[in-house]
Amino acid sequence: MFILIHGAYHGGWCWSRIVDRLADAGEKALAPDLPGHGRDKGWLADQTMENYVGRVGELLLAAENPVTLVGHSMGGATALLAAARHPDKVKRIVYLTAYIPAPGESVSDGVRADPESHAQTSRTEIGGIKAVSVKAESLGPDFYQDATERDLGWVQDRVQLQSPAPFRHVCEYDPAVLAGIPKTAIICTLDRAIWPGHQRMMAERAGCNPILGIESGHSPFVTRPDELTEILLSLER
Picture 1 (cartoon, rainbow, N blue to C red):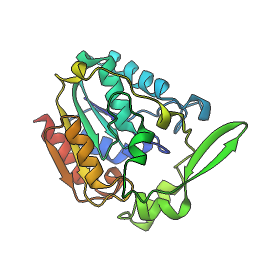
Picture 2: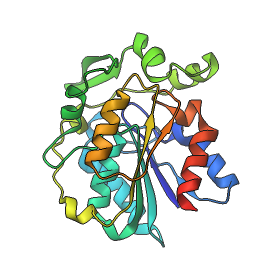
Picture 3: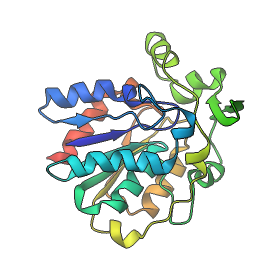
Picture 4: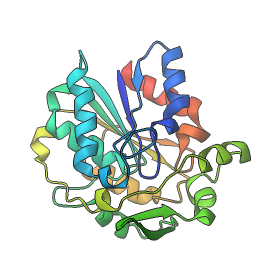
């Protein structure tokens, strides 16, 4: 079974094409809305890394057999921390163009260390709660530059405000706990949100093997669903 973990600004909806394709291949996949995202009843105050990890942990504990975790972008940190908390429930971690913080680092540290990211965000405050959003002029060119107009419109209707709290969360974990879990990285070679070289550096540092490539921008679950599904299935064979 796969658990597909979305990144910032998104919800489980972004994985719908992958869930369908995996099901057609006989593989079960769950794509949960993390707290405060998608159709979850929570909102900005519920968007914390601890809540994210707790939501994934609930699914891991409910699974009969060890699961393959797939974390996209900021979801890479969520996958990492959930696996560190429940290592016996994780068969493999797949980092899809993901942030992979080292112990003591935050996702924000990874963002600041990326010399080539083109992602642009804006800050706001609603009801005393701080939030960030992807700038409208950045969503298409930097996150979905290889999407059709129809697909981009579908995404624009669904992306949402994001609390900055998960970005700032300092990831504390013992790498030795993760040592026995296979780790794969999928590098999106056309990514403008996370520079491919930065993706590879984090993947190599985390001990990912194999490190695979897909000719895609930041969001292949929308723009390259067939290729991404085939890669995920190949890891299960």
